[in-house]
Length: 298
Image (tube, rainbow, N blue to C red; front, side, top):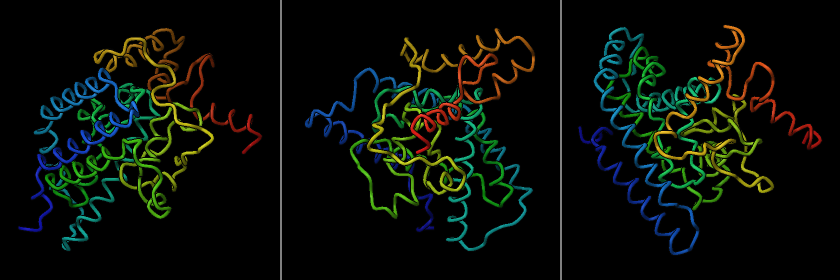
């Protein structure tokens, strides 16, 4: 049907992101903003291609699993407009949950860390994908199939929200109208998410709506007094694309190996990044609490 949103092609959406990325590159060049670095940008492209390969490899399995679960749907929404609104909202919330798990469970952080490894922040940073996410992402979206949304529509809704998630990776847009800033994920919110500043760690997990973060305690505003520093709290010395993918797995394996008990080994995999059996390193929430105390509770 003519108004079916699936008539929007993947090629058209990708071309849109590519065009605005090239425009930002040009803007950065003529204004000497230095938002892009050649090696970093090529690493982003490489990681995007790696993610595409895994996505294509998992595409059939993802579709058939969602389609299988759809047979056991609990209800159906007949109104087309309401159907798509509920699907987008539910998918966005489940992404917030998936993303939060990626920050608070170290095993999943070992995969998601790839996306945060750049010390630059521009539209191509959105291409620096969590390469192995397609292997487990579908399990977070299974509730959508049980809610009566078809596999094809779930995948299309994910594409739409991902495109939105890509275009907020920019420093060329400041803060927007307060109402927009309150409801939606904006470039300002996402700059915070990619920061390595203690205050900003593990904040603003949303893809489209920032409301989830406001409601569940993971929101942090971008503050003038705390200028964003991009990248990881501890950058890997080897920034080659292969090490960028696997360095946290190697670090996790090292920590598990040195853990004195089986329970500690499990905790290294399932507890937040920064947890250590001997207290030699700290998780983000502890660091943020100490920062707050140092600032006098402000």
